[in-house]
Length: 255
Ligand code: PGA
Image (cartoon, rainbow, N blue to C red; front, top):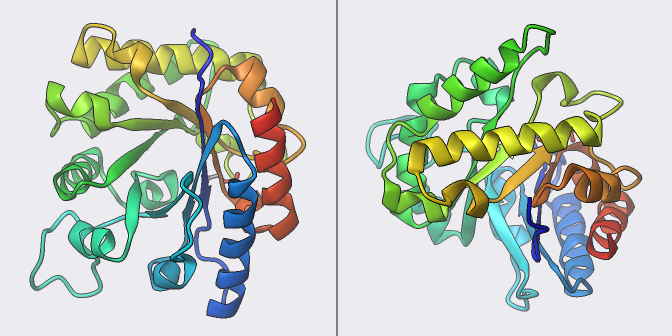
């Protein structure tokens, strides 16, 4: 696999922090850390309510905002929902779609594919999360992943391939102590790219950025990038740690 020139580091804040002032502080540190990087693009995905406060007029050019999810409806009578258009208007450029925590809460591949369509139509770059719940010796994870990727991409066409980003996140590694072994990450990233090629054809699989997520921190990030040969990282807990995320960004940029 070709070594990526640009690395994409995405911080998924989940339902953190609990105050707007703390959110501003975390965003500011990430923005300042991003400004010092030479080969990485940084995206932070705060809760919807903190998106406005996380942006700034003096953005580093490699620093961007993303959403953690979005509605599969465009507008109208959908209480509690937030549309892709609203997020774009607030300054979001990326959107995490199909995170395992939203899938766990009932999101189906079909709904994920509709959300993906909404993101693409609004001009947001979707980061599609996929990953198996368990791994076993029979290799059931490969069949599961293939079906999940196909189902989640059901609403896309060949034209969309260039705008997609995949995040491979084995569910068992999310929130865990240790990430997947970098050698295994490498194997799975190749598999994900192969499935992508099977769907969109040509060299689409070589071009699609594949991120890894699950228990990434400032200590293991560089190794995951180098040995795992992924194009970037999707970071949960460490992305809301003020010093941890800045250190992680530096480590990845120097890897
Ligand atoms: P974690 O979460 O880094 O806290 O394991 C990753 C994710 O859910 O994207």
